[in-house]
Structures are given as C-alpha cells and as structure tokens.
Amino acid sequence: MRELSVSGLTKSFGTLALFHDVSFRVARGERAGLVGANGAGKTTLMRCLLGEEEPDGGTVRIESSETIGYVEQQASLGTGTLHEEFRDAFSDILRLGEKKKAMEKEIGRGGANEETLAEYGRVALRFEHMEGYDVESRIRRVAFGLGFSDEDLAASIAHLSGGQKTRVCLAKALLREPDFLFLDEPTNHLDIRMIEWLEDFLRSYQGGVLLISHDRFFLDRVATKIIGLEHQTATVYGGNYSYYQKVRDERRAALESAYEKQQEKIRETEEYIRRYRAGIKAKQARGRQSQLDRMERIVLPPEKARFNYFAFHPPGECAERVVEAEELSAAFGGHTIFSHVSMLVRRGDGVAIVGANGEGKTTLLRLIVGELSPVEGSVKLGSRVKVGYFSQQHEGLHKERTVLEEIQYEFGMDEEAARGYLGAFLFRGDEVERVIGDLSGGEQSRLAFLKLMLTGANFLVLDEPTNHLDIPAKEAVEEALMAFPGTFVVVSHDRYFLNRVSNVTLELEHGRLTRYDGGYDYYKEKKAEREAAEETGSLAAKETKREQPARKKEPQTEKERRVASAGISEEKRTELLQRAEAELAMAEAELKMLEREMNDPALQQDPEKSRRIAAEYAAKEAEIERRYEKWGALAEEA
Image 1 (tube, rainbow, N blue to C red):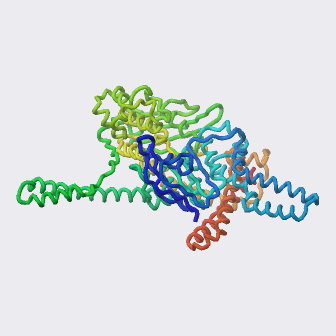
Image 2 (image 1 turned 180 degrees about the horizontal axis):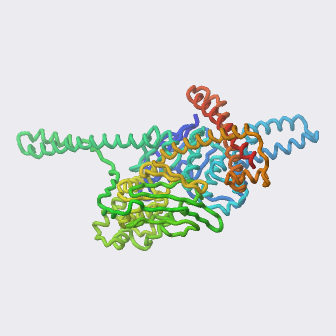
Image 3 (image 1 turned 30 degrees about the vertical axis):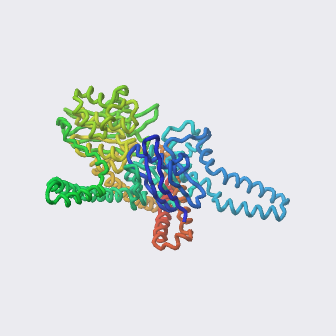
C-alpha cells in the first residue's frame, strides 16, 4: 500500500511554536485537504513533508513512491516555449524514445546482433510501459484543460502573465501523474472553468493528493478527508469540507457544554470549601480541595470571530433601478472585448458576474463605476445611488499609516470605536498598530473591504473581494454582504462565496451577457439545461437540413452565404473549430485514462468502483460522439 505517513511532526521558529505532534496518513487514491487560517503553518508543514524544510521532531515516510509532483505558490520556470517546458517534464521518457529510435535505425541497417535485439526489446517495452507514445496527447490534454491554446504552446514562457505561469507549474506537476501530488493553493489565478476541469482531473486521479486551499467549493468536490491545522496541532476528519465544518462545530458545541458543566461543578465545590473550611466539615472541605486540585481542566480554544453588521450605519435609500447599462461595447488596443452588452440591477439585488478570464468582467465593473468610457453605449446610475468600489489593487489604502490610524483618520473615529470595527474584520490587539504597507495581500483586502462598508455607500461594486483571504476572513466578508441592506455587484471565482451572497448571476461569455435569476448552483443547473436543449435543437436542425433539396446558389460563395446568414465571422468560426478539435482531443485522452483505470487489477477487485468507472467510460464515449458531430458540423461549414 503506497501511503504518506506523518508521525509526531513538530516545528518552531525561535520561541514561536508553529505546530507540534502532527500525525496523519494519506493513502494512494485519497485526496486530503489541508486547511487552516493564514499563518497556521500549512505551507511550512508541506515543505517539511517534501524535505525542503527540516522539522524539529517527528518522522515523514512515503512508501514505495516513484514520483512526487509539487506545485508551490511561487515557482521559477525556464526561458523556452511553453511546449518545451511541458516536454521537459518527460525528459527521461524522451531520452528513452531517442535511444529506441537510434536502435531502430541500427536494426534497419541490418547490423544488429542478438544482444542488440534483446536490448531493443527491453527499451521498447520500458518506453511503452512509461506511456511514451502518449506524451503529446497528455501534454495537450492538460494544456487545453488549463486554458492554453496551440498558439500558447508555441509562445515563449517569458511572455506569459503571472497567472499563466502558475498554471504552467500546475500543468507540469499533473503531466506525469505522480504517485503523490502536493498542491499549495492550486486554484489561485484559475477561472471557474479551469477550476472545474482541475476538480474532474483530481477526482479521477489514482495517486495520493495533499492540497492546501481556501476554496471551500473546490474542497467539497475534491477532498476525501480534511486535515485541520489549528491551535498548533492537526485534527483529521473523514469527508469533504462541509463534513469537516459540521463535525468541527458539533465537537465545539460538545466541548462548550462539557466546559460549562465543569465550571458549574468548580463553582459549587469552591463554594462548599469556602463555607466549611473552618467548621465541623473542614476535613471534607480539604478533601474537596484535593479533588479540585487534581481535576483536569477543560480549556476552550479561542472562539471564532463573529461579524456584527448592526454596528454599522445603514446606507441611505436610492432609486429602484440602481444601474442600467445599454448596448455597451468595450475595446482595448484595437481588440474588441465585448459589444452590445446590456444589464439592469435593481435595488436589493446581489449580482454575481461570472465568466472565463479575459472575457471582460473587470472591464464591465470599471465601466459601471466610470473608470472607463465605453466605445459605444451608456451607463446610467439611479438617483441617490452612492457607489463604493473595491478594486483588486487596493488603491485607497495609505500604506504609510497603521491599521488603526487608517480608520480613525478616514472616518473621524475615536480609538475605541475604530478598534470595534477592526475587530469585526479580525484585526485585534496589537495587530491594529501594524503599518499597512507591511500587511499581506489578504490583510489589506480585509482592511479595504472594512473601509468600503464604512463609507455609507448603498451600491457596492466588488472585484474579487475574497482574493488572498483565508476561510475565516472570507466568512467575515460573506456575513457582512449577507447583512448589507443595499445593492452590490461582485466579480469572483469563489463559487462557495457566490452561492452564499448572490441572488442573481450574470454570465459574460463570448461577448454576450446572460442573466440567471439565482445563485451559482441555480445558474449551473439552468445553463446545463439550456445547453442540452440547444444541442438537441442543433441536431434536429441538421437532420432537417439534410432532408431539404439543394437550393440554387446565390452570387456569393456558399461558404460566404452561410457565414453571413449565421451572423458569425469566418475568423470566429475558425476559432470555434479549433476549440472543438481541442475539446475532442481532451475527451479522447480522458477516455484513454478511464480505459487504463478499467484495466487496473486493483480496481477490478472493487465492484462499486468498477461500476462507477464503467458508467464514466460509457458517458465519455457518448460525449465524444456528440463532440464529433459538433466538430463535423463546423468542419462542413468551414
């Protein structure tokens, strides 16, 4: 049984104990989520497991592991093309392939003896065992899944953005499908579509996975166990994040109940001792004192911070129609981002804007708040609407001030009032004396959001407000928005957050804005229903087209006529065809992986898993058939 085994791990920095006596196991096929507040030591613990950090005590053992994949939050890359970087992950296999080719040439010239033929057989067998023939398909499958195109594969890594480089590091770790994957915040810089692809990949992954994440939706879909790192130790919970949260809260409630009972017992005993210490029952009182001295006291961990919105002044009323955008078009450097987009936000709405990276979500927010001017169209704010804008760069913070000074100076508060507000957003004690420029990205986000809530704005425009926040901080922001009596529009890739705070979802996709009157789960359900209906209608239309007699050609070419009648440019149709080809290649690679799983002897011993994989295989075959029909229709029209 291949497993990661951790026993009694301890780590301190000087006099600061980061964690102690940490013990857990992760077996092959298990996916463990490592959770805890920022500063709890999650990344340090992972580095200890990998041997990159020396623990003060304890042992780490990985049994029979051939390969380990690791994605850290900040990683360095080479200087070649993206395709070369991905091929570098297979350098040993590629060298073996070159050796195989050289031996084939020698054999073809007729100069090989029996020893050479035997050696060639061993090389060819090992090359096949290492799946050398599938290197390119594996590269394309992972690259396309993480949003890279054929053009990206040919481009230099030096031209990639920070987010794209993070995706490259993730792809390199996934390519070899190692026995164990260690992932530190793998969803950072990924949009929702890429996160969903990663979820599906990991759920079908046969190796062991240990991942650090603050993405609760991701942990719910991926994790089979949760390791909670809090109060300087680790507790293991079997199940996903929601199960962990439920059991943790139940344990906390049981501990609090036991604590209250013990405190009542202590009070009664102390009263007995006080009353009879010098009287006829002095001997009994001394006995009770001895019992009290020997009693093992229950210690409650620090209580989780609770947000109280009622401390804030409620924002003023505004018009029913908060913002109206009509026929908006936006462009950058001659490139059209979206065109003819319209939207209406009503008073009291909590609107989530979702879509892939690059679709123009942040641009749309900047048009709403007036930071950008549209190429076409207009944005109209309702009467008495006061806008508060949260940008990812936190431009409104004064980096030279302390946290306390920022709130006091900006809002004319005394120290007691300012500390009360800061405490609601998890700034306590000496933390309020820290200089803003020295805060982490997540801490600055918390402070910026607090300032926004204190402005009295009745319409909040929020661009990724939960980026860099740990789970307790996200919960504080969620509770603040859920209690906020005004209106807000938010861009976020945090699906758990969106499900809690939004009641309207707008999807920006291919330059079109589609409205769904519900939260994220509702949007996904209705979108799936719509796509299924469109696919059925498309197939029916295709059959009808086949039955119709050929029409006389117009003066323009058939290709031009179809393009014009469909309202789609030839460039766009080529893009759709390339995307369909990429999706088809990815689906076929996934089918091959399922086929390997079905042939795994270990899996065949588990009837339930065998049935599940068989069902996934059948569904994937059906998906490939649909994708071939879609590709064929596009190719026919091209």
